[in-house]
Length: 115
Image (cartoon, rainbow, N blue to C red):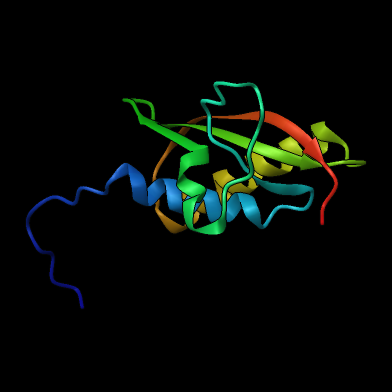
């Protein structure tokens, strides 16, 4: 199909959040996602159906700003897992959604033993 259709496409931030959440959960060393506003200071792991609550996506002129709030597996290298998360999320958004990335921030909320 080589015909161009005039118009514009708008993708909701929730779609990007879901894509980022699933990409993050595929990374080695990630136990789960947690809500960014842990008011009581205790990180609660979100179920797979609510992964987007652990992701904050903000569009800008440079591209998307992504914040991940994760729980890391005890005994893994936090810096290596964080870099792996940045790489995985950047790949998912640039390859699957074809959107430019301005920044990816990883916030490690807790360290837990995988069960």
